[in-house]
Figure 1 (cartoon, rainbow, N blue to C red):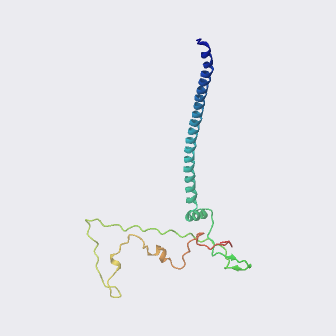
Figure 2 (figure 1 turned 90 degrees about the vertical axis):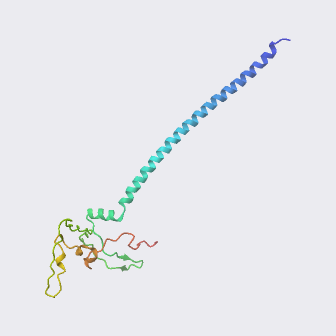
Figure 3 (figure 1 turned 60 degrees about the horizontal axis):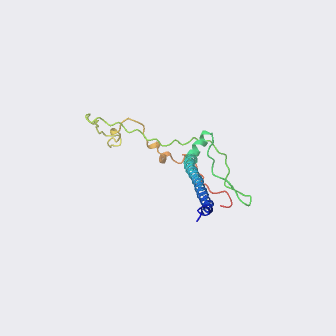
Length: 182
């Protein structure tokens, strides 16, 4: 039997199988490279998203702190604005509800300050001697035990200011809504 014809028929089949396997391996390498590139791109985008989220939260914190009522009131005073009086509303029938008045520049109420504590006498010093004596009313002196270390703080408290103290500025949440839909 001759060996030539059987070898000749097998060669194209072997070449076809080798080409298919080689093409499959090259295709797998290209797909693997594309997936790795996409994975790196995805991790970069996730990192950028995290950075932008942190920046957005920091900016939102700045906006929130600037929008607080005390910050707005302080900025308005810096710009020379004064608090308005009681609000006046225009009803749907055209009637004015409330008494209109011009805003006046009232002095800003000073925040209550804590009075300094009176100095404590040293432990080795004897206590000041107080000799109770009769007063014109016949009672002993109550002021003999006080020191002249500082001014009285009873008039500095907001409660003792009396009815002439300026009212605190109203915040938007305290004022009634002026839009008809609310």
